[in-house]
Length: 68
Image (cartoon, rainbow, N blue to C red; front, side):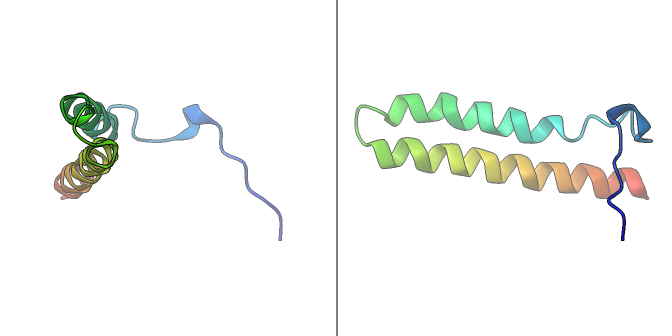
């Protein structure tokens, strides 16, 4: 019933950069959102969420390819 604590350097995927796709997608969403900011704040938020979703999809695709 104990809580296990993992340190960051205990992971075995040091060369795996697939999680960077999430941050990259978020930054792309923010960049695209700035073009829509004057028109609508909801379009800005929507583009951030779309970029985050795209990054998560790319991350899962890269992770599944690396596991094979």
